[in-house]
Length: 221
Image (cartoon, rainbow, N blue to C red; front, side, top):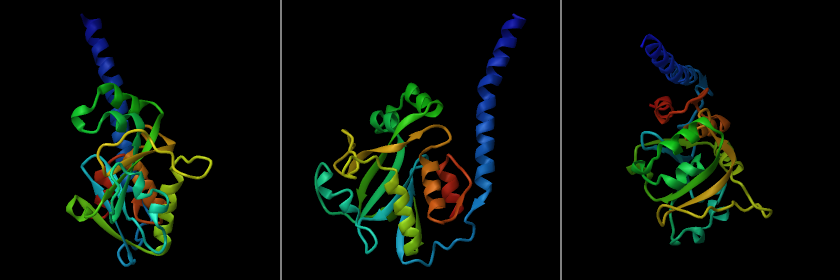
């Protein structure tokens, strides 16, 4: 019996220790600022970050003088074509996106695989008109910052020989699309890590590293 309890104790520590280390790394990464003091308020180009408590998207105007996203992702690609003001860009685990349109659909095997293995990823593009109605942050970017942010997003699309993003064969609604992505997903490169890295790449205020959406929003609160 004593050996059994010792086994349970060791098993508990084996499971708990990586989780504690992971949370500690998140804490350290969150409190180390990157691009501290960068100005995201006085630029002329308004963008948004939106989140649902676990996942963050970057919302950009469909078209401006710097970039017309419809040249990359035409409206005709959507299940039902139509005009819109913004595209929201999210990134994440391909299988999670494919099998989990709602959190009620989440399977333990999908969650475990995406966290503990290097898995294929996808970019989720959603068209929307009023991101202000969601839990959001508004940022005002300079032209240079916007170019860098767009460049970061574009370089993560997997493209064909013509440079066209490779579409995937599923969507949730008439207003969204999925595309193959070049990079892989794992516990240290999550959907929120991707957004935080995008902010860093664009010269915007961010943290060294995070896996959580709340940390990104905390930076701009």
